[in-house]
Length: 171
Image 1 (cartoon, rainbow, N blue to C red):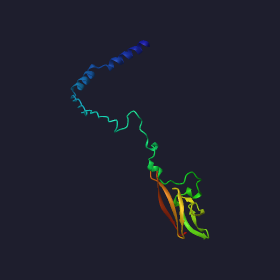
Image 2: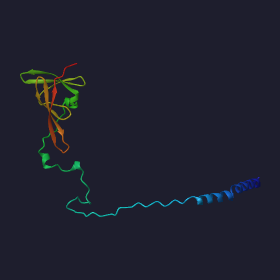
Image 3: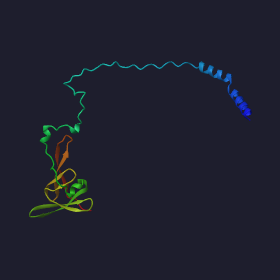
Image 4: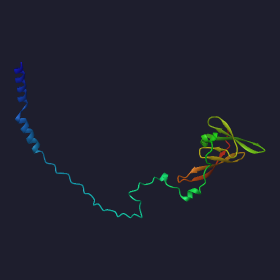
């Protein structure tokens, strides 16, 4: 049995070796046209730049991020919204979600009825806060409520703007 397996393996091995096929393949590969080598990329000549220590930051010091830089002296003169205080109920809403529905008056002055999008109506007086931009109520008339809002300008200061809520019709 061993001899039979050995003879079969030897027969298969000799059958795989065929000099004609191999020599024909080698001749075909040698007959293929030779590709020209790729051209080399032309590199630009390096020209070093002179370092002027007074004009630029030191390369040995990490750059300072913009948000951690010290504020200018002009930032100290900016108008700022009120400091630490508890947020009022209407400071949760943007002004788009609030509407003036009416006013009430007595000997102390006018009080505004502000309707929030969640269906609750709030009484608002001068000096109260509302909106997302630190809005302070500075005036109430029969037809409108005036707010003074603080908008960040991106440089550490705040710009103020006046915004009005005008009396709206109920649906």
